[in-house]
Amino acid sequence: MATRFYLPSTGSAPSTPAYGTNWDDTGAASRLPTSTSKQSTAMTTVQDADTSTGNTDHLYRQYVSGTIAGTTISAQTIKFQIRALESNAKNDAVIAIEIRVVQSDGSPRGTVLSLTRDTTELATSIVQLNAGFFYERR
Image 1 (cartoon, rainbow, N blue to C red):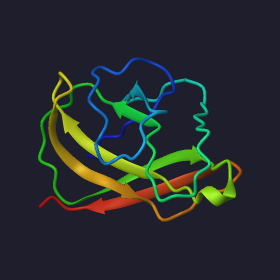
Image 2 (image 1 turned 135 degrees about the vertical axis):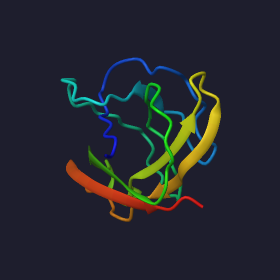
Image 3 (image 1 turned 45 degrees about the horizontal axis):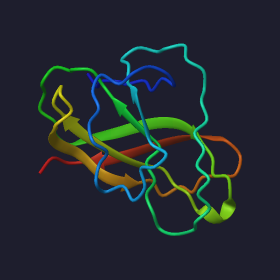
Image 4 (image 1 turned 30 degrees about the horizontal axis):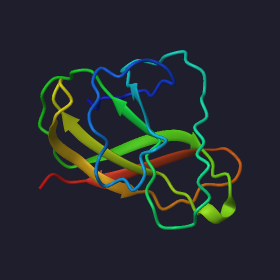
């Protein structure tokens, strides 16, 4: 059965892995823990003053799970659901995701999904996005 992670808006990450080097800007990034059960944290807003229209990847959140059982990862579809918006229609913002495996001390172990962008541009009013990426272990 698939593991489901929830992304609360508060808490302390169990470790502090370095931000991935594929991100162009990590200046507004913060780390939070994941949870395997629903939490009752409030919705949160993360806003960056960036108004560029350049082709850049900005990291706003890094979610870190606690230790999970070892497993073999094969061909899978990763699905996620978030609420998001862009503050300026000229930003042409889309969601990007990267999934890495780290050891309990935060040191790198491997990459499950390299930095990947969704193709749906965000709207200037908040919308719920359902996205999925297929990956195959090579």
